[in-house]
Amino acid sequence: MNLVNPSRLRILDEFFNRPFNGFLAGSDGGEMPSLLSADVAWSPAADISETEKEYLIKAQLPGVDKKAVNILFDRGTLTIEGERKIEKTSEDEEIRRTESFYGKYSRSFSLPDDIDEKAVTAESKDGVLTIHLPKVTRSTREPQKIPVK
Image (tube, rainbow, N blue to C red; front, top):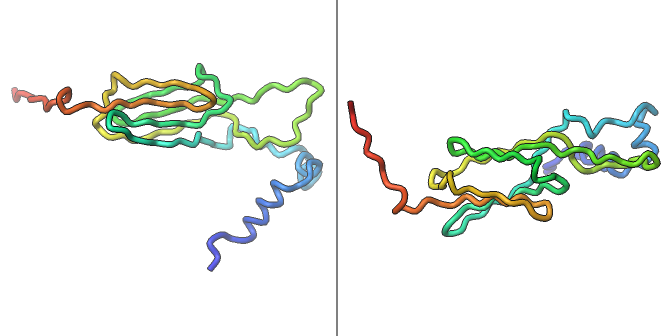
């Protein structure tokens, strides 16, 4: 039983193993295909873990300046968004192959309701964005009685 269409694998294999000249010129000899366009959507890979005191989200954002990362926590959803810009090359450097993703990205996570929204913190180190989502303890989170008017 085939799980993957073999022709698709062949196409991908040819694409990634094509000689530089064929890749840059395209199969019809025209311009280089635009793999760097904003039309290609991407999102950072993320690992989610939990300790007794907090949830941790570690998103892979190599080459992204921490000033270019926006994190929003709203109604139980955490969103990481920003843009990874293409690095400028020198005039004598010609790009032969790019396998990195560039452009705008966005990644959202639905989170449990036991998070202390006011204590969420984030740090970036070595291309990994780590978001700390502290849990609310039962003693600090008590049911709120709402009077009927």
